[in-house]
Image (cartoon, rainbow, N blue to C red; front, side):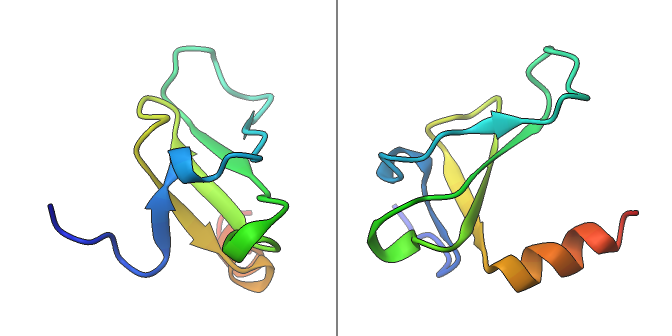
Length: 74
């Protein structure tokens, strides 16, 4: 198995994360979910995962990086 890139971790390692979906989601399970891990090495970051693969990798963003990313699509 290859190592995950530095800015990812298996979503299952984020034990205290409460995953949220957009209210615009259709419920068809084809969206992304976000969480803010509250402790451990990921505290203070924003985690993003594919709702179809909840045990798969989660991308980790700093608050500043996430703000820049989402501002691009407004």
